[in-house]
Length: 84
Image 1: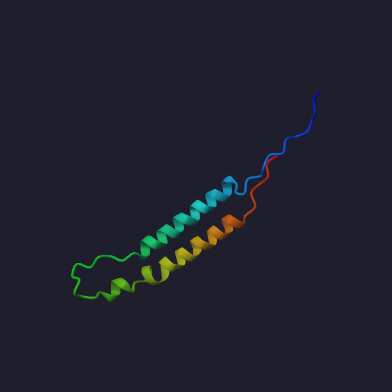
Image 2: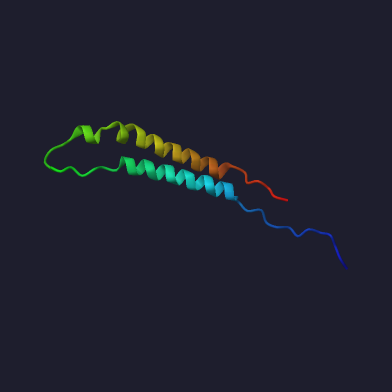
């Protein structure tokens, strides 16, 4: 007896596109953390405030980290495409 019933295949929680967006978000966050990391001063007895309080560490790096988190939230909330 042949039946034409399709077997129910479980829908994955995340699709390939979701994982791609998650990877992009992780890379953006990693770049932000890398830019925020401190550099070693040649003379530890002197404080170089231009190096510590630079635009890259105070503004750009936290912005990239927040953008990475937004991309991660987008990747989690995005519905995967249903293939039939």
